[in-house]
Length: 303
Image (cartoon, rainbow, N blue to C red; front, side, top):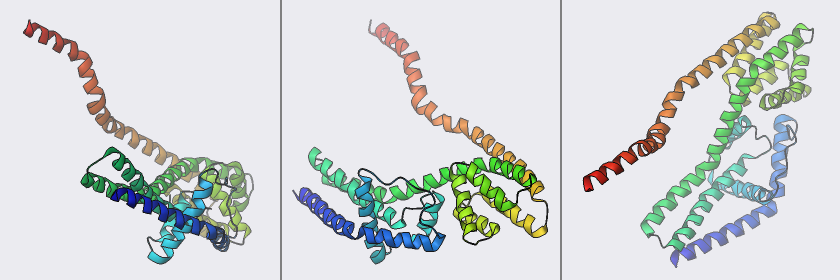
């Protein structure tokens, strides 16, 4: 009965908090949009799909809940989370929304588990231990998902850099300037690298130089390939070296790096295959091969 009462109070408190914060969520979204306009000069990098279904309610609720707890408790470094979200390509999502989702997961997972434990009649000690573990897992789940998304996006950008450099070499040697070549590449390329180039183009329209826009790109995308590209372009501009020759050498270097990374992953494959072989395939293989022989041996011994 005590667990049922606790679950009921948690549901009631969560409902009241979400309803109260959803009322002021439009003002919070407006303030966050103005912050992004002051930071980048525009509200959205690209038009993102509006949240639908359950997210249309959860996003404002998470934003309000995250804003409430972030302002009062200072749960985490908001600036660090914003940088990580920019790396993941989440330009229009406020960091406080992720904090809100962390709080919802930290409360929602244990609540579901407590309801299940009460229904199954589980021992209180085990239920409390699992509840604490689920609360910790729920708190870290959104951050882990953003980190995985950022790593995947950085990998895709690294794989697309040689194609970008080839396109820049062709356009620059055809007579275009560096800003015009970057603009053409941003219009042609798709995916995360194309999005970052379009941000660079937008910043140039706001008055930044191409080098400043590329340096800001490095801050958003801390990738080795992007850092090498920007460093080479900066040195070429300072030393007056031919940009086309620098880009050709850089493209060769990046392809070698990508080949080395592929070879490294291929060398890790046998080690990664060892655990599925030992714990999943070999036992079944032994059962299929040795099972009939064991059965025949037992019959012979019994007979």
